[in-house]
Amino acid sequence: MALSPIPFAGFPNIYCPYEETVPSNTSFSTSVPPTAEFDTPQDALEAYGVTQKILPTWFPEGFSLSESDIYTLDAVKQNEFSFFYSNSDSSISLLFIQHTDNSIDNGKYQKDIGSVEEYQVANIVYYFYSNAGQSCVSWYIDNIECSICGDIPMDELKEMVNSIQV
Image 1 (cartoon, rainbow, N blue to C red):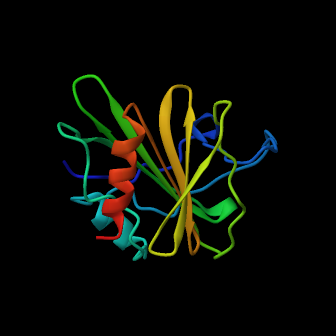
Image 2: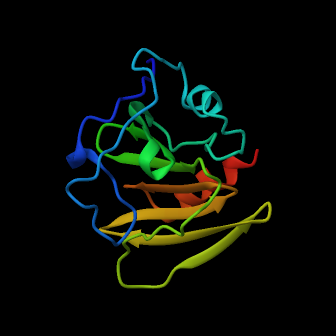
């Protein structure tokens, strides 16, 4: 499966991690050529200068890459990478937001009522929580905001996190 960046096609497709609303007259543009293709998520990240270890090397049995989206949002100085993995009845989504101006505005994540568990691996703090019945984890590394959510048990999500630094 080749991964292709998708040019920004209009306001309704924006994932906005901020509480503020985006004015309707805001315009967004992309600087990604629509013909670019990548063989793997790692190739896509490296093409945008992401060298940090943020991708898991372990996934629960039966999961494979099913879809990917790559957006460059020049107006907000971000590259967004979404990688979706699935098996016959479950899914896992990986979202990475690269802040190209090297700033990071702490993202906001929805969660169910309950505590957030902090978990540290290789000097990175990971925040585990549940949202809408899914197991989720979020973390920051340099100028990259990262999250993984899926229809998997929390212990499998932790195993995915443990595989990132390998």
